[in-house]
Picture 1 (spheres, rainbow, N blue to C red):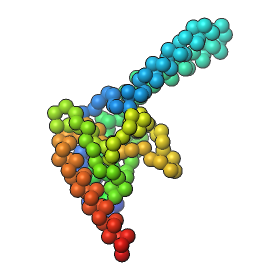
Picture 2: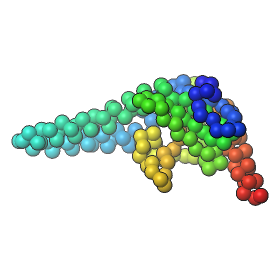
Picture 3: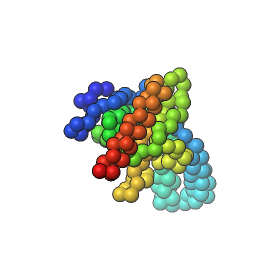
Picture 4: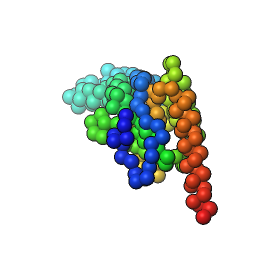
Length: 188
């Protein structure tokens, strides 16, 4: 990835840029999503097996079954495809994740406001970088709009990062420097 693919702010410089070299089909949030999807499908099937008298019941069964199948298979597939078009960048002030499955979407967060980067190792020298430890529900909602709004943003998660230990060190240094700059500006 080169700097022309990300929208830099005036005076901003790129410290690291890359894209996922590994695209996992499932993530830790699927420990929640898959059982919920299976329970959903089981409940829908049991309910409508006994109540399939009308056309409304049949239509509702089709819609609710489609929703359950999407929850089980569609979400991981969309995430997998989205990662194919994802690029990451760390500047001296922000971490940026850009993807373009259907349309270009850019998520960014100020480094000074992020927790320390945490690595979840993957195969070889790859891994996933989060900012602070994320619970299963945060993983379950990440990158799907859940939790967004004026009060809360979904976490930025760097998935499938090559040479993850070196990238984590660069990120940790950039976060520390951003915090120091913010602290010195507040002290002036």
